[in-house]
Length: 428
Image (cartoon, rainbow, N blue to C red; front, side):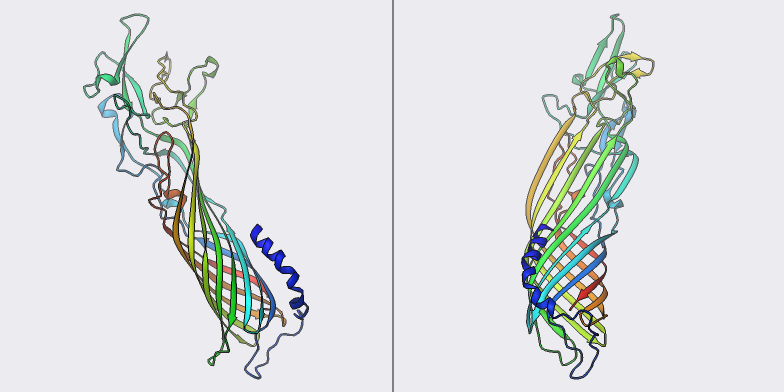
């Protein structure tokens, strides 16, 4: 926007000569004598309201992509289950959004220049889920190959399950030496009681082109050739928040929070990923238009050979309400600390990556103009834009504790935007 405003202000002093000869409210030229209505010359300006949709991403699981993670909801082997991701961004669909496009320029004889800019902003769409299961990559570390998402479960009796290695067993001795409690270390599930995922897209661009108008086509209509440069920014954002219910009735006793059962091993967590595609490069185009009485059919196409500088940013916090360690405390409701991660603590992180890709862009426009006066008209039409080599935020997340991460393996998706435009034109 700042660049477009600066260029417009720079060009304004040279526009006065063309504006003075516009004759804005003179009657529209409808004569067919001598080959029909002659195309206008001089300064021109158009303003369009856009109503367009942006295609959704290819979709990705909300969680580590795998066949599942082996987790325990209790101490025994029959408490084991394979946890899979219950959500995917496939639920996001294309949405219709509003935007604007402004264009201006000047033509004299066969020559001219053209400056245009557009911007489109989505209102965002959400996925809201309850009891959302997520798979996280939890690599082992240390001498005994422990993991961050492991915690202790207590069990009655005096015997350990046979599948638990000695280093994953502990015996808790009470005040009476005969009062002993056994506990085993297990891989904990990750489930959010409430999860909200929001996707938003913002795009804007600016183009400058030299134009050359050819002689009249014997079959009717005129052709114009465009050559110039273009900048286009496509920003895709994804934010996810996962929360768990907690029992905080004992806060006054300064006891650790008791989470509502197994699964709340990352309570609470949130992360935000921003994929910026900054595309710049040369552009060529071709426009054809034909006038009959007050009506003009206008069709144009552009090819933009874009160099895409991708900047990916990610930030968030995992397990903001966790207190690492195992605290055994008998009470009327059970054992505090059971099913809570032993080593995972609240972790805030910031990640970034950069890449360069080739992003070709093809744009097609079709408009039908109606001339109200000699220099003022209205129009309606359709615009379609296809681009490739675009990074989408949901496909870049690495779901790995404790700091997540960014993967550029799927940073080349195609995007299709299309919709309708309604606007006014001056001396076009």
